[in-house]
Length: 153
Image (cartoon, rainbow, N blue to C red; front, side, top):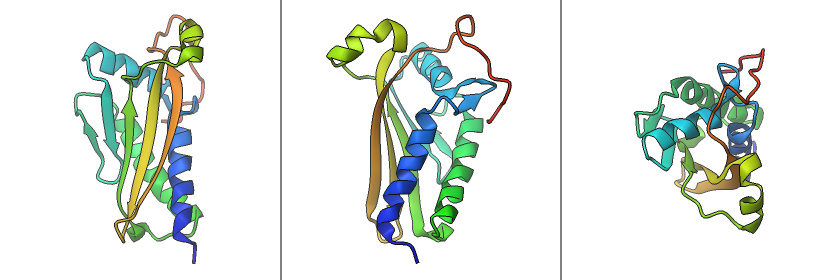
């Protein structure tokens, strides 16, 4: 029987994979596509409820990503030896409305604007397991990005 504190590792795995360049939509970095879409709509926070398969706001066209991470949650739970009913909720929250720290100002033209990704899992005993990662992201621009030959999502 796995220990419940391993749920933090599950949250870490989801967060790390979500912000990774391997998270793709049609061969392009999914986060860049999402960032472009939220900027067009002047929205700076987005929430993926990967347990119930719901996006807030629902105007962001990322259903492939939502479906993928819904399945990825259960894959990680299975790999860690947990049953599917141990989780009551699972969310990925992205906040693009951050003030850059000094180093991010220096590299803004290369890496883009800062964001924070938070993955929160609530277990069947209502204990919250979460992880937060900060990184940088540019808007999707197919003129300067290479398209992957492998479409993961």
